[in-house]
Length: 166
Image 1 (cartoon, one colour):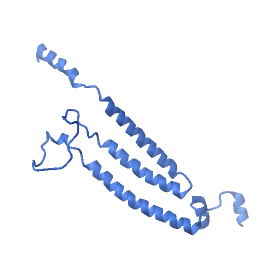
Image 2 (cartoon, rainbow, N blue to C red; image 1 turned 90 degrees about the horizontal axis):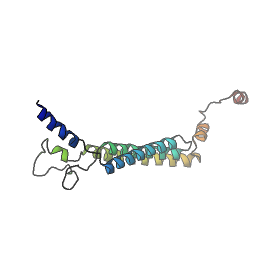
Image 3 (cartoon, one colour; image 1 turned 45 degrees about the vertical axis):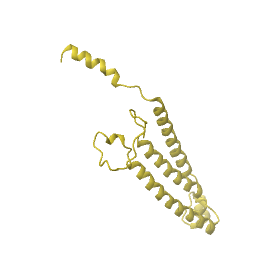
Image 4 (cartoon, rainbow, N blue to C red; image 1 turned 135 degrees about the horizontal axis):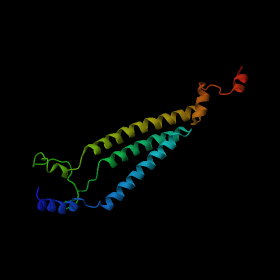
């Protein structure tokens, strides 16, 4: 490589490194914060002693998982495009896309996973809410500690309770 060719290659190098799009970076950070807060709130709710709070935590955990899949799926916006958006993954008469045009399509896998997770989440939500209603009507409480005492499976924890039980 001659010094002239090296100079030309060096002159083009700064053009290759574009500054990140601040709007996209901001939206990525906002989405990451939303996922983190949703996971944290769902875990907080699942650590409560009421069955309805535990159920709300489970539902919110499903939404947080869907949001994290969406965050990892990438941006549907292209950098160098006339309208700025990627094409939907629909094959028309043009046939199968080749390797050069494949990057212009949105990846359908994360969308399919999220749609499946939403449907399964609705089924789990319906079952869990029905179970909570039945437990609430039968026992008149949704507190986990009260339910454990009603079941009779909770063991005494201190020596005085053991002596009183004898």
